[in-house]
Length: 286
Image (tube, rainbow, N blue to C red):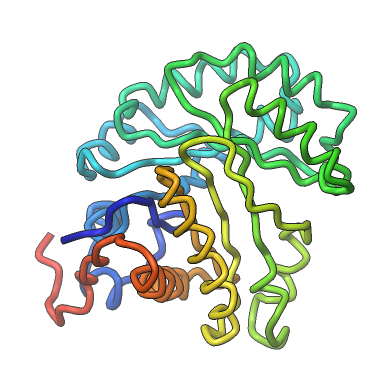
């Protein structure tokens, strides 16, 4: 039995540091995705935030994954951060058309908005979402503190997203901020990642959580237990949530994810996580 009921993944698959543990020794970069998808059933797909892949690359991604795998790509930063969703129709159409060959393998696209995108821009967000094609699903991540100031502020956003059939991306940086800040990369990650209230509200069938962990696994355990209880309730409600695991040094992200799944198994029927190909002790022949 493999994982079932929910989707678990990391921010990307192209980490050479995973060769020799998650991936077999000797695995070439061109084979990373195939090995990654043999363990995890989703990926956040940060690559599209920075650049648009070629049609040939998209075709290779499709060939490297199974029908059960889901990509949750981010909208390009040109659309979300530079244009702030305004006058971005050509870029949006080009992006969605490029991803079209993966349609059956797509989870919600993530529309991550910068901290300067505040409540005064909600009409822009509403207009942008209203023009997106309904053949895809979408989720919005809001980073302006004013969206979390009061329950009424949060509910205003949730009502908009529900009306447009969108999920809200929930980012939790509490594990990152709970442990020792002397670990490499922790201070920089704390500076980059927003420190916002966490509202575990599911608006639709596929709530999305981005959990930012600490390199010291023991620090993450209370947060793992708390989120496992939430995911268990969502699963009991018939939802199929997405959980993406991050770390300041993503060398540790697969281990954090495996710890999470092991804990979730104790409170929900989610199957077993597949064994890591790199732990077989064999060289990659691919």
